[in-house]
Image 1: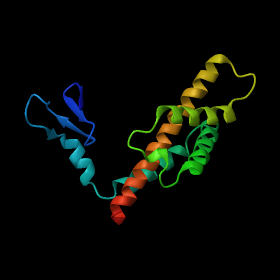
Image 2: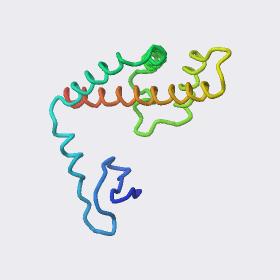
Image 3: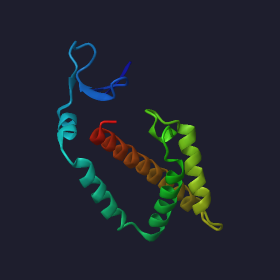
Image 4: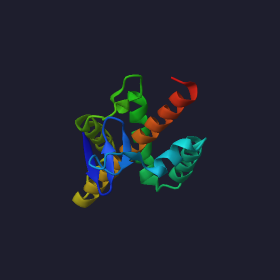
Length: 144
């Protein structure tokens, strides 16, 4: 089963984008994906960059990021749904609502509440992606 996005085909089973299509008879890995996989130490540098730029977040975003990080710390364990190949959208939304309820204050306008909800969702998904990448790097490094 594959889904087409412009000239790329995403292979659900292999988890790799390919150029061409099923009708072309030959699926070739996209070159930029090979280059990313071949770079040594890429994860460590990316992690340092992320941490540096997070220090420049506005104060409210830092507070939300701290809440997201604390929540992810509580559910970060072996077998957690965070590390499923395709995490459940309902569970992720439930996590977002937990952080939103913690950060929401009375007297917040409707537009600001929508902004807060979107910010929490983006920060949570980014934190999950960061943890998944770190876990993949560790598994690759130690052969797990």
